[in-house]
Image (cartoon, rainbow, N blue to C red):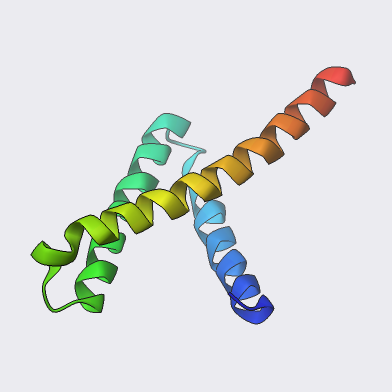
Length: 91
């Protein structure tokens, strides 16, 4: 992904996070997290269906791709939060 597309992706993600933060004023983090994961799964299934003429045949390939990219993104964010948490505890 080039820098321009990466910036656009992060900007879009920030909009979802802003919405989640707004909703967190009246809902629990757990409920919001489940809703976001469900929305991501639902949209990912839609995205996969638009990329193939035979989703049943290509389902495993798409599942592996989405699982791999989600895990990579989650690992990166865990690393950032672990660093942030360790700095907070040090102070």
